[in-house]
Structure formats: C-alpha cells, structure tokens
Image (cartoon, rainbow, N blue to C red; front, side):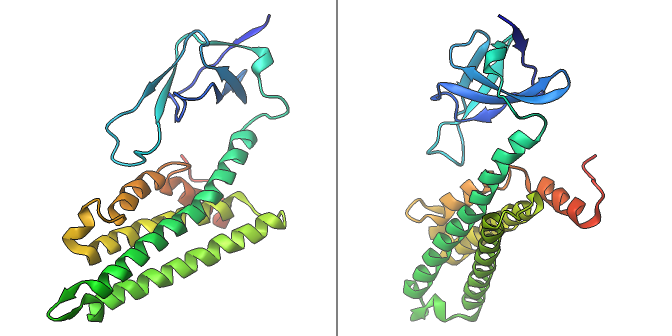
Length: 234
C-alpha cells in the first residue's frame, strides 16, 4: 500500500474529539490536498480545550499529528489547491453572516424589552434620549445586515456570488452583531453581566466568531484585493 505523510504548519482546531473522521488539508508534493484521517490512526490524537469563555456548548479540540501516515486511498479526489477548503469555508461564512444577524436581533429585542420595563426616575429608561439613540442605531444596523445577507443569498441562487461578497457579509455582520451585543449590555447596565440575560453570552460567542472562519482582518484584505486588484496579504 502506498502511504503519504501529512505535514501541517500548525495544529488545526475543531470539534474532533467526538468525530470518527477528520478532513485535514495539507501539502502533498507542494500542492494542497484533502485527507480523510480516521480516529485511531497511529500518530493522530485529539485533546479537548477547556476553560473557554465562549462557545461553551460545543466540544472544541486540538488535533495533533506525530508521524501520522495516511494511505493514498484516503486522499480526497478531484480537488487540488485552495479551491477545496475555500469552497467549504465560503458556505460556512455565508451561514455566519446570517448567524450574526440572529445574535444581533436577540440582543436588540432583549435590550428593547428591558428598556421598556426598567423604571428609573418614575419612568422607563426607554423614554431617555440616549437609550432611544442606541436602540435606533441597533435596528438600523440590523436592517442593513439583513439586506446584505439577503443580497448575497440572491447572488448565490443566481450562481454569481464571489468570495469577496461572502467576506463582506461575514466581516460586516459579525462586527455589527458584536457592537450591538456590547450596546445591549450598556442598556442593561449591571444586569447585562449576569447569566439571567443573554446579551453577555452572545457578546462572548461573537468574540470567537469575529476570529474564526477567517479573521476580520483577513476578510478586510480579501475585499481590499477585490477593490484594488492588488493582494496585500504579505
């Protein structure tokens, strides 16, 4: 049997401790290829990551490969280079654009309901100008994020979507959702840091979403290249 050895620059992070297989992208003869690595393969191990501030409902694990050999029969066919992993990433990133909208809406509705029922100086804080300014900004940005995600979906349906369109949606919507979560926490005051309310949980989770599936800075560079035609990744 022919064997290949996968060499990775850094250990990947994922939900792999409970998975029977891992899809790993590495270099073979200088070309990026996909490998199916089965649980129990000699040299392949996982370690759960504990003490997380966010994404606490999921199992997050680090993958380690030490002299791990994978048979050629487990090489993914018909795909070479970054097209394979980026094709998967673009699907995930598009979903995240909508997920950011959902988190933002949850925080907005929580802040709105709290502001209408929290009484200060014999009236709800929703009657204060600064609170109304925050709520108006939140719903404005949510509406814009919804329209952006909707347009990207229409481009996908028409098979006209490009990677930089999806980068724009993921980058914008997650950033706005994180800002909305923080603003909701401001409106809730000290109550916003308790687990009785959800804006703090969304805020912590969005800190992770801001980073994974392509960091905010990387998506900025993807858009910058689409605008200027000049890659600035180095």
